[in-house]
Image (tube, rainbow, N blue to C red; front, side, top):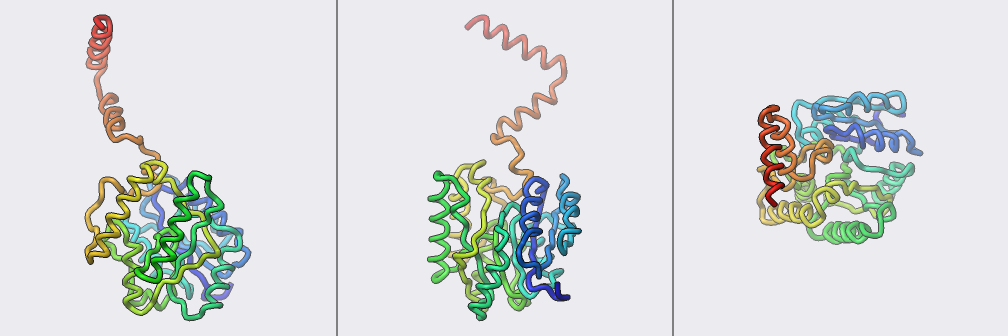
Length: 283
């Protein structure tokens, strides 16, 4: 690999010891090797950093802990550390085929004027039930690229020259990816949508919170951007807590109940138990 790699892959991570190794394995088996990887950890509570470090002998990999648990801060830090001509921001739970980076290089050489891009999501990787959502997302992104740029933060690529003046807004709590590509376009760098190569986007938030709930939250944030506003306050319905969020109890009520029960003294527990048994006798 040359001193200055062609690509720098920046991966913000937070409690992703389960999913990050899958993406790093995909990167380690790429058919084209002129790239570096920067994992910017948000001070994870699990083994994310330890797991990531096991890949340092398989590719050019740097793991750094950020001062803030903030996806935009982590991306910006990664961009500052990056040596590559092109920086690709990827989510820790993405999956990519072995020809992915070679395919991106081909697209960039075919259209040398491109400076910002995103990629289609590979609908072939999903179940019949999920395919309509993926197909709609791809159609929506491709159509909107010509009108008002839309890009999922799961994968955004940009030339190093764009990042000299355009960065991720660290105050935005949702749709910071859309905000980034909108401001890049205003600066003269329109977004390009690549139909190929495609990547696999994790649907774990949709599966945990429900498709309608997730889409409603994201649509709300995008509407704010269209109106010239930004979501700067955390949304309760769309918490940004990294991989640990998906390990939590699905219902906040039962999660709270479980902790309160665990805090009961033995005497209190027996009193409640006797009350429930007495109540049951009279029913």
